[in-house]
Length: 154
Image (cartoon, rainbow, N blue to C red; front, side):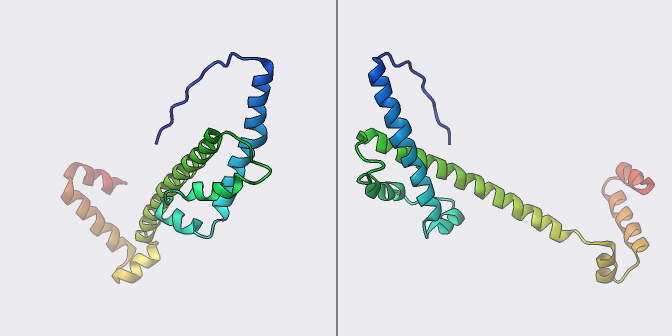
């Protein structure tokens, strides 16, 4: 998921720039923060995290009651839409990252479960450690003769 940022220069009066800044800093940013908090506290959050997907319209539903909240009201409609879009983007990205990390962790856990200590190997195979090492060296030399001779020296 990628996002394109467009830069532009706002050429307008000081009062207009001040008004826009107040809208963004005093109303819109706190709205985004409130939506992020409500999403994290939502009862279905863990289900969404496990699925790695946010159901459509969830953020919009959370935003509707906030439009009448005195802390966030009187914003232009596109500011509400922008807040919803930003929160959806943040959570979709976060869910994707969490899925990748979980898959990586599962793979590493699976790998660690395959590794055994010397004692576990000798117990499971009913053979001494020297016998296991000799058999492993023979298998390696059968697979690739050049590398097998190097393995024997190690």
